Structures are given as C-alpha cells and as structure tokens.
Image 1 (cartoon, rainbow, N blue to C red):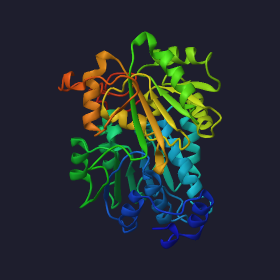
Image 2: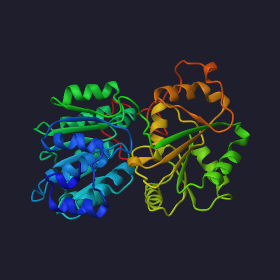
Image 3: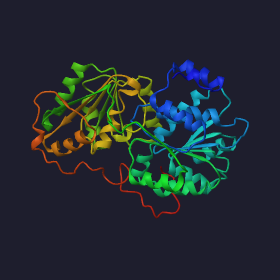
Image 4: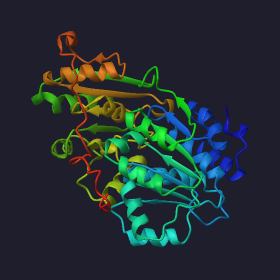
Length: 403
C-alpha cells in the first residue's frame, strides 16, 4: 500500500514525498487503520521495521493544531530516543502547524517549562523528566487523547513500571493507548490488562526476530588477538559506516584509544559523556560525518542509523535481547547489513542462548566451534536495572531529575 492511498492531510503527504516515503512498511500497514479509528493497540515488531513512523504519522494526522494543548504524549526510555522521535515528528509535521517538543533529563527544566507554556500539541518525554514536570510545573495532561509507550520493554527493564503507572493515573479521562515493543514480558501483559481497553494485537515477530536482510557472522578469537582481528575485518569489509559495541565504558575507552591510530573518522559514545556531547555525536553519525562509532549499549536501542552497514560486537552481548537491539542498528527498512560478533571460549554458553532465542543460523569466520558441547542452561541474563547502575527503587515517591 502507498501513502497516497491513505486519507492523510496534504501537508503530511507533501512531507512524506520530500522524504522519499512511498510504500508503507508491514507494521505501518497493519497499525494505521486501528490508530486512525482510535483503537487501543499493542504492536510487537522487530527493530528497524518503521515503528516510529507507524505511530508518528497517524498522531500528526489526528491532533487538532488549533487547540494549544498537549494532545499526544509519547513516553520513551532514553534521551537519545526522545530526540530522534521528536525529529521524526518534526519532519512529518513540517508542512502543517502541529508543534512537537521533547523533554528529558540533563537539560534545563526551566527552558523546557518555557517552551511548554508557549503551546505544544505532541510531547515526547522520558519518564523521570515528565514526572518532574508533573510535580513541579503547571503541565496538564487533561487534553491528551493519544498515549504512546515506545520501546515499552526497555522502559520496564530499566525499572520504570511505577512511573508508567503513575502517568496512567494522571489520565483518568478517555484516551487511546498505543504500546510498541520488541518483546512481550509479563509486565507488558499487566499493563495491557489494567490500562488498555480491548486492545488490537499486531505481532510481526512471532516466527523470527532477525530480518532477512541481516547476515550474522561469528569468529572465535583469543582475547589478546581480538583487536588485531577487528582491524583485519575493517580492512577487508570496508564498511560504509560501522558501530563497534563494547560491554563497558572501560572497554569502550580502550578500544577507542587503539582505533584512533588505525582508522580515520572514529568517535566513542557511552553514558559517561554529557548529554550535549552525546547528542552531537549521534547527529554527526547520522549525517555520516563519522564513519566508525565505538559504543556501549546506550547506542543499541531504538536509534535509526540508516546508513550503518556493519555492526561489530567486540564484546558478546549479555543476552538475546541485547544482541537483537545492537544488530538492529543495521539492515533497517529492508537494507542489507552485516553483524560480526567476536566470541571467546568462555562465551560459548551465552552464545548458545543467543543463537537459539533469536533463531540464528550462524556463519563462521575461520574455524567453527562445536557448540553441541557448550552448556545449554540459562546464562546471558540481563543485569538488573538501568545501564550504569543498580535497579531503580520502585518505592520512591518523587523522582530525581538526573534522567
């Protein structure tokens, strides 16, 4: 189906044409009719499937630009995703008078209050900053007609269930709820049972999690040879753009220091950098001003780097979900992509879990290990709580503003 076949406002169609959007993706084709009819919705789809536009386009279509109140609230887990989301909405709404804005921690709350006072129809927010504003400003949600939870499973993994329930409690009036997620943990089932009314379920990940356009390669390496192998692969593959994922800030720093002397146009990003620096790096990478990005999992969730051709897992991800989201930074919207993962002898148990859970048939660079001899138990479990610290306490009443 083409966007021109939908009864969209001319300003939206004009913006989509300028962006080169012609055909709906499967997730968009299956969700648009329900969203436009005002149905509550649970959408499960793999990363890179067009979920952001699946939400943003019908929301821009539905809000009333003459009403100078927040009519759509979109909750996301990270600052980076909030900025990406509001950028996406901004270009969709560019030829309309709909106004969108993002609020998140690490930025002046007074500036955000001032912008909100001037009128916003679509608000994108991280949970902590939104609740700060609900406690400490005249922010009103009484006119919200669309409440969207994006990357819902990641918000729950970060311990935001209590915050999400608090936001729901602030909207006792009639509204439509849309929940977008890559997985369906028990907490999402709890939310859907308690807060969604007869939701439509759209599920496009039941049979497999990895897109056909993504190739999965693995190489067994010894720790002392890992950097040497990475440089060899970079020279062989000649990536258009690549992200090298590490499991910690310390590993990220070390790899970045080594790569600076071997490749041009390399930067690093992790949670230890201030928000302005992180935002600048993400935008430069998206514009292709940076060719290689060394990153922790802060860059693995939800962000759309459409020109990334290669993902290198310098450290094996902690669990199947982390593998899915790291490798989902390439092969987006049907484009070709390659994920290359280094595996050490101690990783075989965790690798087995990742391969089985994601239904991946691995391709091996060099010798293929005998995975049948690796333990088949659990393992590879996500560390509790948000990245960079312990799990957030659910009994806290008033939020901190650091998020």
